[in-house]
Image (cartoon, rainbow, N blue to C red; front, side, top):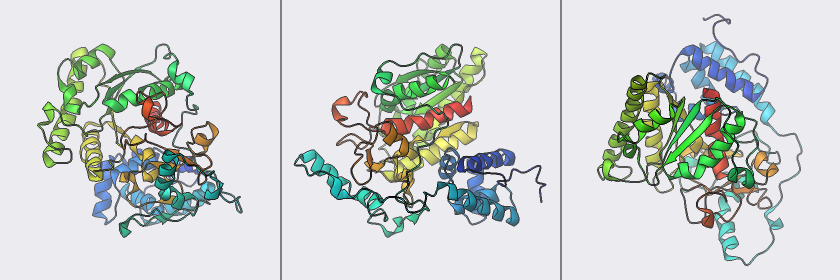
Length: 427
């Protein structure tokens, strides 16, 4: 058995944040990638999906016990140490439980009657959220395999905030229009990608500049795919011009362009070409750094949110392309998509919720505090993540799709907070 002084233990973890930080220390001590941890767990007959672990280690919430024990065992802990991790997890989880006898959530009847057709449609779509918040039962899904696992969170308690170590409040509309200046002498973060970069770049710039960690330079090509950036005058030229410390790569991967070979999104040809393009991007950046005589910037692959029509497409894109290439080249992933999926529901854990699309989620405490809870009086508070009639874009009234973002929505804020946290922790 490895001595206590060598292997990190959760013995002194007092809060969920302490516990997750110790998990990160254990992974660092073990020297294993997320893919290697997944393989080790599989050899022991346990499931430890690397995207799930990536997400768990990027948040300040206690992971589920089965994940903690599988993680500890994959990191080399023996049975006694695994039991210690499980016991510590149960002890720290109490911190996340709301106080006893909280006031009951506001019932749906408190919502004022309306004849507005959009409001009527909204209330119909909120059926899932009603089940989650007002009744406190499982998400109703057709497949019984999606039965949720209950968490020890009182329905009357205030949900925890999205992951954030930046301690920077979300921007106001005025702050998004007039962004803070970049810190003097700070390293550059290059944010590259598709239309989601256009939509999220101002919020990301706000968070990163306010943190004082870096300067953000963004470039976006709507409907672009990763291979569209492989031309010499694009990705390599951007590295030469900005000489970044980090490169954030944001590609939803739904479009087909000339360089994709016409393979339909989700086809085997599509995944093969995306994997090849991801490796070429990493190689181009490495080669250009050598030519410029600068340290190779670290790549951060943004893990995408659920695809309503093709959930398996995003799973494979995240796990088989972005995570795999990040592991191969020693780079990072940032699980921004987690925060706009059913996995971000704080009341129930939906099986495979990470790749389950949702238009609405329960508001968290920060969204309530800063006026980002779209419908604060509906079913205990509901946040709308996407514009009407658009399952992909994230909604914020200062975004380029303002005409379709008719309500205050935290979708962009949730997404960019995770990316900004990854930036802060990587510099």
